[in-house]
Length: 462
Image 1 (cartoon, rainbow, N blue to C red):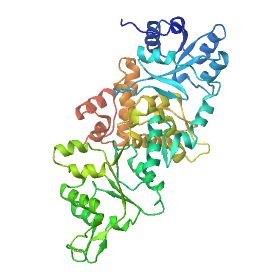
Image 2: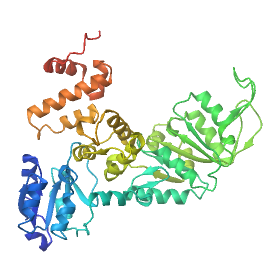
Image 3: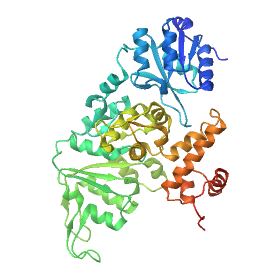
Image 4: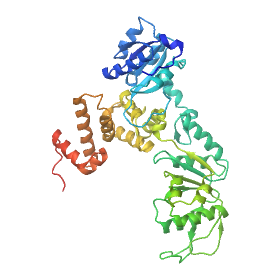
């Protein structure tokens, strides 16, 4: 066992471990004891409160599912019983991607299970905040625009606050901005935020999807054309660069721009003028260029697919959008935001602690767009006041099942797997092949599982 350096005060810590899962509780207790803590365990919030009535604890390590059960607020009740107690929340880690640390939820440290000694030591040694507020008060506090929202972007994490500050600065300038990040991270929202905070916010914002248009059409869209420039050009048309005036042109997926058009765009940016397709006259343009990509442009330069000089012309200021798995502390705020958007009820539905725990532990390969689709689906399928775990998408349930095999019993695994397969088939209209792709498994596997679980979806397609 590697020795762990602890503050002297941590050597005698009395810790209340609240976890409903026996195997998880056993692992957490073992790590706590490795950190020289005296551990008392409880399987429910009520049992934990009963224990707190008879003794004093320095810290409470609480499974997220028990943080707020049945309207009660265990962390707040614990701090009232023992002012100054250090509350640490835990959530089951289902994905393989490393969890960015430190995360906080409701103002408390949030650690992924299985617990790691180094992360636990850091949380135990952190000074507890004054936490006499309820989770509901903490949630209300994080809903303020300053904390979580900026120009239709949601998230109060430090990563997002840095981006908000950067947007506020670059919006006042006219030089190009390059926004980089995975698909679904909100790159167009950043571009629109730059525009709406700029002096030309009342001017046009013109988005152009470089990956969705054929090369000839992109050239005409950007630079315009004169009458007769090509077959079907019955009249002259002004290009979007000129039509935007002193507004903003957003070049989405700039990495998809054909190499032959990159030189034309570079010249336009250098000279601030364009020549319409088929014409001889040069036209000045004033629009600001904001570009975005989910590709590695430097790798594209090495492979000859992207011009190095264009990259440096666009890359005056770069804004790197983090993936959702890199800012999981924003998931509760984003989920509430989408609940308000898609749930017509007042007040809107809420998310159960178990479902929130799954949202927090999922890797979100589709980022914010995937989370939005997940919430929209859950709202349409859910009933009552809370979204439950079974309302989550089948692909997510299958991901949970596949990454939890060492911690779930066989009956639970089979129930999760059967439910995931049924939901995938329902989503794909009974198409076995498409359902298998949704679940990330092979065609042979899904046919075998259908037979194993006796799932009848009619005659198999050829």
